[in-house]
Amino acid sequence: MRERVAVTGIGVVTPIGWGYDAFGEALRAGRSGVRRIGAFDCTGMQTQIAAQVDDSTGDLLSWVEPRKAAKLMSRSALFAVAAAGMARRHAGLSRDAVDPERFGVVVGAGGMGATDLDLLMAQAQATIDSARDGASGAWDIPTFVRIFTERTNPLAPLRGLPNLAAAHVAIQHDARGPNATITTACCAGTQAIGEGLRLIQRGDADIVLAGGTDAAVNPVSVLGFSLIGALSRRNDDPAGASRPFDRARDGFVIGEGAGFVVLERESFARARQARVLAELAGYGATCDAYRITDERPDAAGATRAIELTLRDAGLTPAEVDYINAHGTGTRMNDVTETLAIKRSLGAHAAGVPVSSTKSMIGHLLAAAGAVELAATVIGMTEGFLPPTINLGEADEECDLDYVPNVARTAKPAAALSTSFGFGGQNACLGIRRW
Amino acid sequence: MSGNSTVVGGRPLDEVIRRIIADVLVIAPDAVQPGKALVQDLGAESIDFLDLVFQLEDALGFGVPYQRWQRYVAANYTGKDLAVVLTPEVIEAFAVEVMAEQALAAP
Image: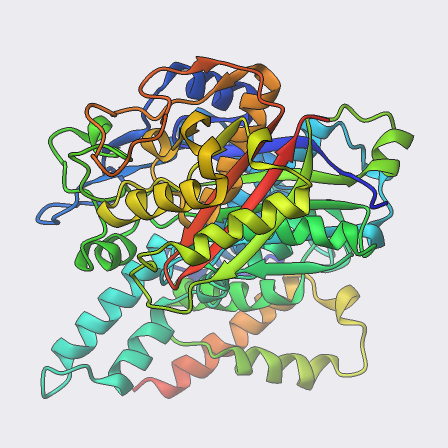
């Protein structure tokens, strides 16, 4: 009989609120965090909206000890450290309560390209200057080397390493157990939490800080997704731009932030009389092995990820009371995901509420799965289902109950959270009331 | 600090060094006192010396390769416990040495 794994703490930095209480309240209120991009001049870009973290919401640096460690943190690493710190505090886990060697960290991270806006700008300027200074007007690399070396603090490129978020979290918490970074893009956060579950189940850790982080609101990342047509262009109505399952949806909205949970072996949680939020009961992961940006039309990979999760969690389709969908708001995902839910839950699909919190917070990329798992647990614990906002008229191929526009009072005993990534990676988590 | 009257950008060198160290180590300038070891007393780690040399370059207005700092340390402090001997005065002496070199090299 496998020991259960408990979720004992939640920490989030999101475009609609930081921490369990503020985030939960915003979810319940159906608040949108999507605005016109303020982080940089987006004039001329086809997509000029994003769900940004409002830095004035709190003091991110207050979570960094010593303060000096923040010099080596990119924006996404700082989000991770803050969210992980909030999760640990929420779990009431004191410094000496954990054996460092039994304390693991798994982080979904590594967005598209550099996420440090300052470094990006320095690189761009050095490239421009070297092309101008060089004889041919082409990228004169020796000149670029000279200019870049003169201007770039050696610490800046180091901040861009994708594994640093997990490293910084480990340093902050003296977590000397297994440490991993998962880079499966849109499903990285879900996978990180799933792998954290496995670490405890395998006996390699008693406590795991698991989550995801991304801070891709920068010109290169926004353009990267924009050029392949993945982003909404509803620039005149930012709050209404993320419209999962809606007939008028036109793509996702990039968001930034981080989400972390504290996962604990049951015996460990009981021994310290931890307040348990929920059981992380199951995890399933597959790959379409089909195409990079198209999902299998028959949703086979996504369906199987859900089925594996149900089996892992010991859940029947009839027992699923809520699904937090991947629900990006792209033309394709919402239809494919609807099909996967129907195929995996069969006749029960019609009666299961499914909502996409991306309607409110946008797509947090590597952080999405983690923040969405947090939203699911918050809903289960506080007794509500987060809504899918901006659902005016559902696509005719999207005919499930998507909890339209308004949060719904409910006490789910079991729920799923799904994430599907570019590259065809599919992951799902199963959560039970404790 | 050292009483050295060398001036950089209109400010005394020792004040410039103090500000750089404070910025690199994220501590108050007042905490940067003569005799305080950067590693043992002020919390510096290896990567901070890269940052420090880069900021020194900026302040002095000419290139100071990190290897130049490494040669200076090797020439003067081989066999010594660097965690203990590297103080603000050492940084200042290094700056004086490279400034003198630069003055000779410039026509």
